[in-house]
Length: 428
Image (cartoon, rainbow, N blue to C red; front, side):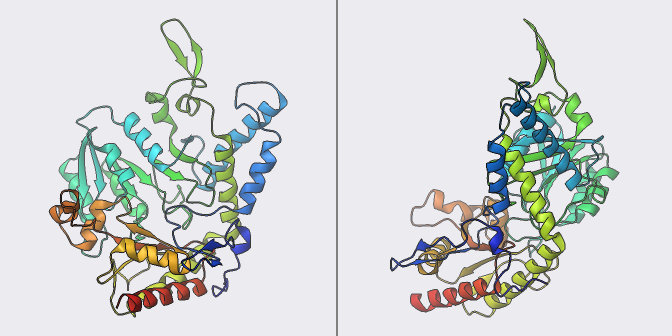
């Protein structure tokens, strides 16, 4: 077990010890508890990028040695991703995108062939797995309970009620607000029982828990590199090859066709037909290198360490008077390393600003691109949650989120908790 007093994985990253200025103009080493938004970079990722620059050429566009090298490495990146998730190369393909948001938007553009198609999603979702579906189909929502967990009985109710009419269920693997991990194995079996297909927003889970397509029958998985310690503007859709062969792509242009005639074109098979323009070669190889590093560390180690940090942080927060925590903070087996909280009588944005200015602790504040979910956790209604839009005396409701990465330590959480206590004293 890694000693989490001072995390031994820090040496794997760039920039963690780069000092930043705080309120008194002193420069100190920052603490990053905003990993659910974006993660720092593995040194091995940057090394891989630097090495690849020496032989970088056009992908699939030439017979020069550098072009052939780059094309080969780019293709091998797809294969590695499929192997990483144990997804069959006969059944699935990989389409590279810029991030999860783009990937889900593209799926919503391609998969919805009729506005009367029914898609089921949840009130737990990030906006990126909610807004892209709105206006394109009939969208139904699963609610959450008082602790913010999904009411999965509602999923079966909706699947049964609209038996044969539900085309897709699109759901987050893990919440970016509470860190709840949804039971994808149970959900996938239920979805397929009613002949629907399962789309998974994997943005929050891929750096924390290993997904296995042989255990969880996912039809489409979308995720981003910038949450896997490779922030080079890439992500991927893993999806059913047969469906992509049948569907029209939402993007057209160079690299997608075998031939173009005056009034028609002959498209290449997927994934090429779904990747118009010059590919993000460096984004793809950065993503793969980060996945290799995560495998080297081991997901069992990552999960065990994260549970220690989560348990320690929650106990600390719940012991501080005037701190309000959200979600189920006692039964935490189904949670990633994310805590959300407020301090009584201190606005969430002010709290986050003080954490940064006093001790260079980076957190996230607000509603985390999950407004309907945060509203439910705060136990407020639509009118209360949107009053700030029409009343300048009101502020946007929200909370503060601290999210942990594989390099964070118990020592950092102690500093975080001590700073919260200092903020409370200063405000009194």
